[in-house]
Amino acid sequence: MSPPEIKEAILDILESIAPDEDVTNVKDDVPLREQLELDSMDFLDIVMELRKRYRVQIPEDDYVQLATINSTVEYLAPLMKDLQKA
Image 1 (cartoon, rainbow, N blue to C red):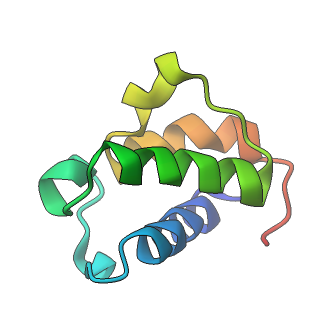
Image 2: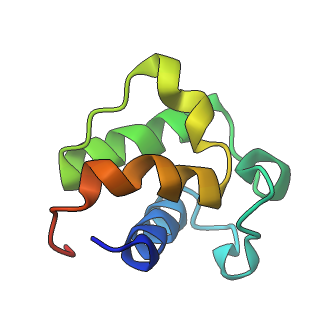
């Protein structure tokens, strides 16, 4: 998957986890928790959804890498580079 496809996948997951949130205006470089009403369970749901949809394992120590859209795409790019868009 390319970085734009990864970003699209992340936004799709965010929409499914927080359907009441408008993810169309999410800024790429601002922490997601500052923009959306996400609690720790929502964040864990995001990680689990990445695992379920794309078989991406994210160690708990790396969760801090998923703070913004940009940092999430950067973190996931090498892990998802060989995946086809779902």
